Every structure is written in structure tokens, then in C-alpha cells.
Length: 429
Image 1 (tube, one colour):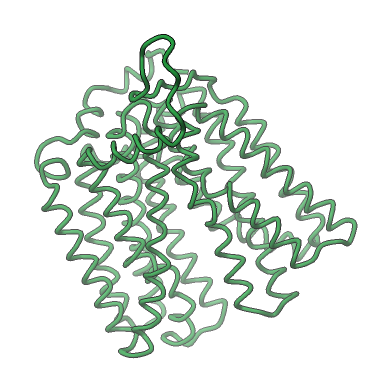
Image 2: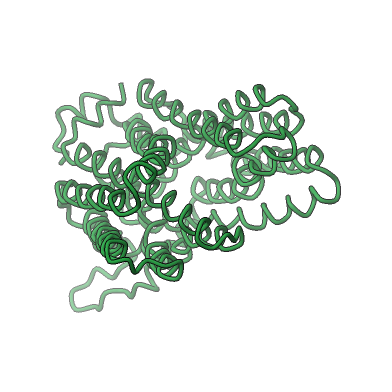
């Protein structure tokens, strides 16, 4: 079982810290989002607040450089100290009666620069501390912290703010951040891997951060598994995630004719499917061929979206999203395992930072979908979007079949080199 990753003491601390931090993220997002909506009444400002959550993806590759240079543990501690400080500031402002939408936007901007890179550091740290044979299980466990937070953390934030009030709820959020920081301090203190591109001669100056960033990008471009994974990540953000998440308010209101409660069921079904996938990956250990699993489950995801675009029953739609959430999470966990294994020592932070940039496919995907829905309707728009995604997924698989399909790819070879006994008896932190 892939729960064997818990035999690594460092991972036990990391997983617990990630869980508390993820729940704090979701509670804080729902609390502040509701505050903005109630005190401004503007949907535009609400969407602007939501967009600030992804601000840090712009600098994700540089965070990856720092992670490779300074170590994932150091970066996570520094970042989580910042979350706790900002939450404490908000708590003080609420208690003093000084909170305003302008303050919320200012704090959201500061947090948004750092928060998206938390996942970059989490995955990089797994690559540093877990044998490749157990990447899939460890990533499944890690992903479960986020999936459980999307389901339970958001409900907890909304429920606590209703019962206890904003100030008391922010005390809980701050405590969660502080506890997460304390547990992160228990993660293994590992010496950062040396930059493979840095000069080895004594007396030669160390390469600059920009040179290290460039080296990371070149490494992605020259490694088939990495390049294929990056294109696929951008593709699903462009053509799959808009239909699976961003367009759900439209689907609830205009297709199923339900209220916010119905929208909640749609969102929760997709998130629950993802959580079930994470738990399944933990129990089964995932595929021995994560690169192939990525392609297969992405294809199934697009097929389900094609069906979802033509479903008119709310019940069938919820079930379809549940299954879609399951297969998309299997695909994304498999993709991350492939990227971590193919990245190699010294590049994992930069590779995961570049991977984070793929989220920018979401914005043009949503805009294009909205434009087409107004002109050709929702079913045809989803058919075109999912059809193009399916076509290009197959093309990516064909173009990089030598490393993604036919022979054992980097991730599989690395996994085969280890067994469960290595983790149990190896000298891992």
C-alpha cells in the first residue's frame, strides 16, 4: 500500500502541515469572498478577488529556483510564516473594527503572491524525500489534503463564520496557519541539491538566479516527458477545467435552472470525485506507468465532458461530474509523478514552477467559452472545447509516444528501481 510513505518521518510532518494549511486556505477564501460580496454587492469585485488568488503563478518559476537553491523546507517555513502573519493582521483589524473591502484586497494581493507556490514547494519536497517508487502514493496523500479542504474546509469556514462570527472564525484560521507552520518545522532539514548547471571549479562565482531559471526552462524543453507534460497541463487548463469548474455557475442557472444550493452540489461532486481518486491512489499505489495513465485518464475526462455538455438532468450531471473529478485527479497525480521523476535532482523546484504557469490557459479558455456560448450555445461550445482537447491529447501522446507510451518512461524506470522494502529500510529522513 502507498500509505507506506508515512514511514518517512519527514512526510508525516509535511502531510499534517499541508492538511492544516489547506483547510486554512479554503476557510479564509470562503470567508473573505463572502465578505467582499456582502459589503460591495459587486460580482466584478468578487471575481477580481478570486483572480488575486492566482497572482503568484506569475513568479512561480522563480519560487522554484529559490526552492532548488535553498531547499523546500526553508521555503515552506518562510511562506507559511507569511500566511500566519497576514491572518493575524486580519484578525487584529477585525477585532479593532478596521476591516474594509480595500484592506481585504490589499491582504489578498500580498497572500496571492505567495500562496499559489505552496503547491510547488510541497511537490518539490516530496521529490526530495520520497523514493520514486512511492511518488504516486505520496502525491495521492498530498492531493487528498487539498481535496478534503475543498469539500470540508469551505463548509467549515462558512459554518463557523455564521455561528461564531467573523472575528472568532479568523482566530481559528490563524491557529490553523500557526499549527501548520509548527509542523512544517518538523520536516527533514536537507541540504539543497547543487545546481547541475553551476560551475564546479573552486573560485568560480555561483550562477545567478536568472541563469538557474533559464537552465530550468532549457531542461524542460530538452526532456521529452517534461515537455509533453507541460503541453498537456496547458491544454487541460485551456479546454477542460473551464467546463469542469469555471462554467458551473452558468450550467446551474441556465441549464439545470437551480439556485446556489444546486451549484454547491455541482462543485462538491467534482471535488468529491477528486478526493475519492486521491484515496484510491493511496490504497492502490497508482499505475506503474504514470505517464501512460496521464494520457488515458485525460482522454476519459474529455469523453465525460462531451457527455456532460449534453446532459439535461441535474442528477445525471452530478454523477458525471463526480466521475470526471475522479479521472481528472488520477490524471493530474500521474502527471505530477511523471514530472517529479523526470525532473531529476536539482531541478524539481524549477520544473514544478514552470508547471504552475500552465494555469494561465484557464483565462483564455473561459473567455473563449463565454464568447462561443453567447453565439452558438452551451452544448456546441462544450463539444468543440472537449473535442479539441481530446484531439490534441491524442496528438501529444503520438508526438511523444516514445517517452509517454511505448517504452518504460523515466518515471516508470525510476519506480522499478525501488521496492517497498527500500522505503522501510532505507536511510530516508
